[in-house]
Image (cartoon, rainbow, N blue to C red; front, side):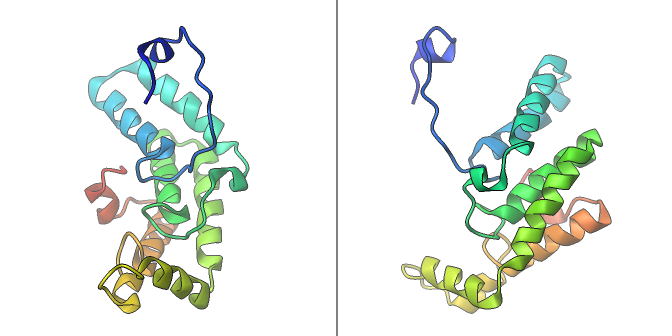
Length: 164
């Protein structure tokens, strides 16, 4: 939460490092703002969003604070957002970052991925096999994102999640 003074810029906000994921983070919020700027023809908002996205694209990969290959809070979902920005703007920087993130996603070994699945399943009734194939937290989301970037199209799931 921030104060009104911080919101209007009269008081400085101390920024801390936050995860740059699609799911309720800066990347996802900026993508939503970009889509809103398109629908409302708000050029000023669109320019602001692109400028902020450019700052994020230039960040070192370690600074994204991502630790999973998944869609929701991981590399694949963030790659999907950058790919959507590429499709919207034709800016190659967005495509390059999407590809860089997908390369990291596919480098996770099956045992590393299963360790991750088991760690999130500790309080969940689903088996590792079920989550392994889910879109948000499984291999299917990573592979669909990879395919959409290679084919330069948006996947149906990205449309459902309002990434595009």
